[in-house]
Length: 378
Image (tube, rainbow, N blue to C red; front, side, top):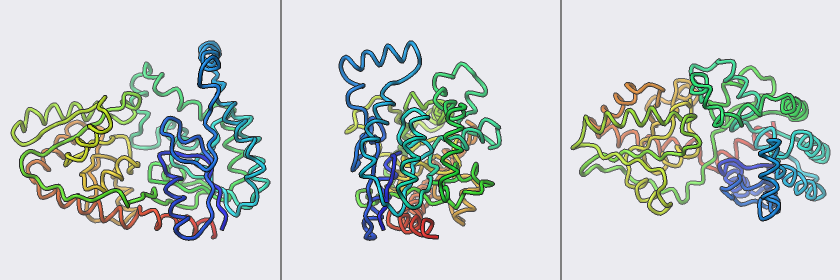
């Protein structure tokens, strides 16, 4: 089968590509490398000219004056030049509703060309899109990453990009894409729940994870239990990091002889990995029902991760034992969970083993690739 993957997000399409190739399929990936993350791509459409030198200076001026980023046009033009090479595929999958990341009217035109010159098209819901944003804005989930904004509108700079997905122009793009695709697949419960009543929703397939370099280590505890929190200021509120910080302040005073708390914000990568690998417990995010890539990779390496592991997640995978700790937007709940683990270190080892078994059975990239093939073919 010839498969075209358009767009990248947290290396999901790269991992899926490797799984599909291992199963004998021909796969082409077109993306901008997920911006600064610079993931591999067969055809890279990342802006080259408008983000450097004099053109970048002009771009900055235009953005400040009109809130319009001309690098979006460059992405679209670079994709346009590839159209003649992106024909005759059996399956096309979009990483989201705007996988090319150009302006909506140009995005619609380019995707129309892709839909017309290939056989079947599918959409992946693995991040922010119209359906997910509308679901959160209507306050349908018990909690969501929008909660800090609902409480404090001054946080709009951190959330402005989310509102771009409910503009009139993006809504038109959303409707156009849904009219053309055969189905939409969710990568975890955070996206499956908003799609539950959608006629095009064909199921959830867990994020594919390439496990070859993620070596599992049993979390033996010889001295203190090491708890690690890595902070990204841009997603500080959306991940509920302030709940973790408050809980860790309490734990630091409560267990000075039993717990070592490491909080990192600007560590160089090599030092970050040393601290990360040394940790027994990793604090990931609060406003989630399921796990993203950061949590999944940590779980594969044997860490006990505080992340999304809600009832809906447990029920979907028919889990009877914890594979991660469900981190709620409640300081006392986080403190109680940490206290239990510190006082019962055997539970850390149990959850660690459960986590790796879960990743092996539900997130292995070849197993996930086979599930995608079944969805596409049926």
